[in-house]
Image (cartoon, rainbow, N blue to C red; front, side, top):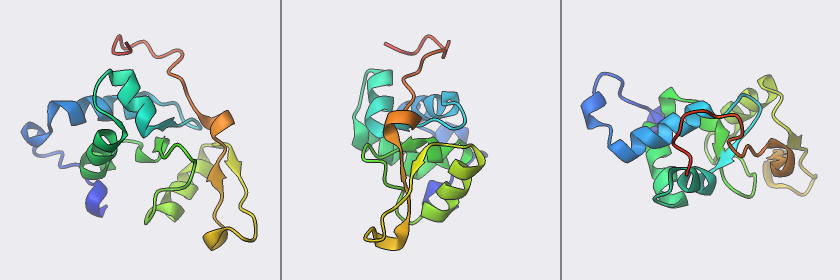
Length: 125
């Protein structure tokens, strides 16, 4: 899983912020997504870049495909793996136009975005 691996045998190496990011990723229901900025807002600290960094370094053991870019484009280098997950989970997609690079769909952010409703972890601020 290259850069998205999480070393499960070294939990002491997982920074507290990254652990919190991964906990939010695990809350996102199948078929729904949150943006990097949504996760940062949920946590009440950091920003999209910090969330993206945590996901890139440690996100391989959680549903990483559910934490996405705000514009709905698929994660570069992981598009096909993510697309498999989105299709399996019936995540709303917008089919690509013929002019789109690689003809890959985007996430339909209006329909797929999750606001945390129903999550009962107490972390939301």
